[in-house]
Length: 489
Image 1 (cartoon, helix red, strand yellow):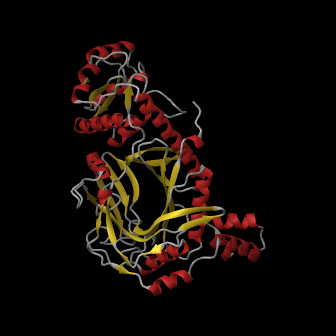
Image 2: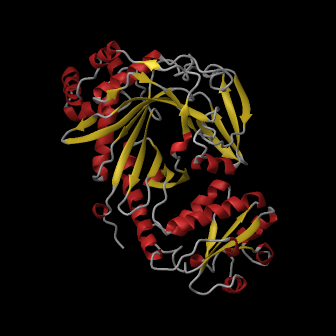
Image 3: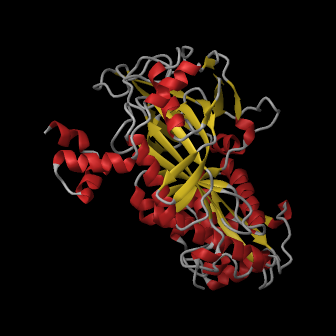
């Protein structure tokens, strides 16, 4: 089946995260970019707790179930006790506050008279405290790019997260040099347009930010999060990890195709009698699997893993079905379990294969009282993780009957996305008790309005005229990271 972007009812919301170059972090005087100094290490274990509303955040529960230990690398030249969460935050950086007001004024957003710092629960290890500090500075306004006008939802000032170094053997490692660097977050209203129009909006916002003093330049200093939904889909999917505009169009097209494919699968399942998976549908087949010739299964058993199967009534042909190119529910579930340290899954639509014979499959059907209309998923995992893995798979099967689950995904090379974690809920935000409200005076707003950058077209024209180059070359130069070098030369 051929995918048509225009028929999918795609809506795309952009969130731009721009680092600021004020010479210090948001809540302490550390720079974050100083030459390396003495390195120290410490570990943490972060756990989910109930919010002030008495509810757990879904993303926090997911990270808690992963049971990771966090190893932090703290450079004395780029971090202090604030980043280590051993000392309360200091006063908010004045320059960062002023830049957030300039951005708000440039986008004609309504600035609040009092700005409150909030804590946003994050226990994936990227914040030593288990939360990120963020401030809502303004709401409303519009970004005008050519003939297109995109509404602004909100503008926030927040601290950047720690820099991830890697993950191994149940340990996640971070460097604290980036933690606390000031960051402007601009959330735009959803765009009902083409991937190209989404890119134009992101490009226009990036150009506006580059015209403001003390905005950081270079790879990793600006990141786009993209919120995508399609017609008849169940929820909104957040895509993280986009740093290059060239990648943005491909990601929007792929994610729209993926979601439209999941909606199509949900409609197919709506014509079948799909029941919720219960304990009676879960089978421990470790003793049976010991006889298999599969190298993957034998390796898992030698590592002490348990082999389990989930029986899914009336699900035959669904896990391997491909409504659009590279979009399969079985593949989706295989990606999910990897975040529990599980290599993947086997399912009926791809068996016999991988050393599991047709006779092995036939005996499993008999053992689990299955018919040819049913399907199963086989998974190998450590015994202590198996219950979480099975619950996760069962929930995903149930969600497949509804459409697109609300989740956070990661942009990967070639314009695709992979599962990262469930989407956070509203329960993760609560007030910061260590920082007093920031009062925004009328003088602050007047000063911000005086520092609004010139329109992009004028900057482009002035640059071309000043250096006697054509408009196309001036545009390439201004969009690059080499403008300062060019100016110095």
